[in-house]
Structures are given as structure tokens and as C-alpha cells.
Amino acid sequence: MTNVRRIVLRLVATVVAIVAVAGCGVDRLGAAAVVDGHKISIDQLQDLTREFTTAVPGQESGQAQAAILQQLILRRVLAAQARDAGVRVSDGRVASQLSGLITRLGGRKQLAAALAQQGQVVAPSQFSDWLRGQLLFQRIARKLGGGTGAPSQEALAEADAQLRGYSRRAQIEVNPRYGSWNARSGVTPLVGGGLSTTVDQLSTAGN
Image (cartoon, rainbow, N blue to C red; front, side, top):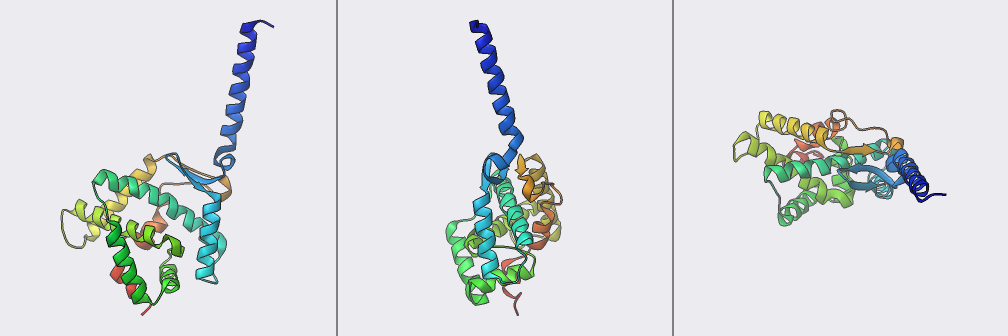
């Protein structure tokens, strides 16, 4: 066998291997989804789903799992939007507001239940990340509105539209076992259910 033929055969074998891996998609990587190269693992998704259904009994695990996956995807997209907007929230602010919210609602399980009532599925270990997303979204909307107080509905709608744009440009791949990603339907339930809801509004949800 000539050297040239050996090289050709090696190249063919390499291409076949690459195609085989690519054909398996994110499932081959043990990922529930990949967002701009960042992996959301199946194990993480399953653990968070169990944590949520334990904290809020009676929830349908399949629906909870889908909602949590959307939330994890959206978190990556929102982080990119906030970076480009030059908006950030300090760890201290997140911790302080979360502590106050948990106290007002009577505990972490009560917060999980209050969020669930508003259509938001958040495992207790994700409270800080959830609240950071809330605050970032509010600040983005406020900046877009050019104001310093609470953002207007118009500014919130503009921030929502911008977020959809980011989700369309992001490289998002969802494991087929969990469905498929759509920039509109994948983001809408999360934005409509919570990113425009203030912390003060949530604190009265159980009253």
C-alpha cells in the first residue's frame, strides 16, 4: 500500500469518526443542551428537577424539567445581553435581597412555592441565580428606558425584544430527548412569567 493511499484512508476514517460524533449531537456529550459552547448537563438538569419537586410537592416532573432547562438556557442568553449592556449586579445585593425575600415569605420552600404559583420553576439551590437574572433584566430595561426608577412597561418590552434577539443569535442546541429550541417559544414562558415581575410583587404573592 502506497503512502498516499494510507494517508487517504486515514483521512476518510477521521471524517467518518467526526460525522458519527456530530450525528449524535448533544446526546453524545451527555448534555441536555449546549449554549454558545457551554454545556448544560443531563445530570444537572435531573438533579435540579428532583430538588424542585421535593421542595414543591405535586408538580409534574416532565413539565418542571422542561421549564428548568429553558431557565438554564435563558440564563446564558441574559448574561450575554447584560455584558453587552454594561450592566451587572453585585453578589452582596443578590444575597441581601434574597435573604429579605426568604424572610418575608417564611422560608425557602415558601419561596419555591410562590414562584411556582407564578409559573416559574426554580430549584432552591438556584435562587441566587434566579434573582440575579431578575435584577439584571430590570437594570437592562431601566437603562434602555433612560431612567433611574422602576422601568416602564415600554422599556420592559424593549428589553424582552432585545433578549429574543440575543436568543436568535446564540448557538443553542437542545438534546432531542428534551425537545427543540425556538427563540420565540423557548423564551416567552420565562419572560412573561417572571423577568418583568419585581421582587416586591413576588413577596406579596402568598398573601
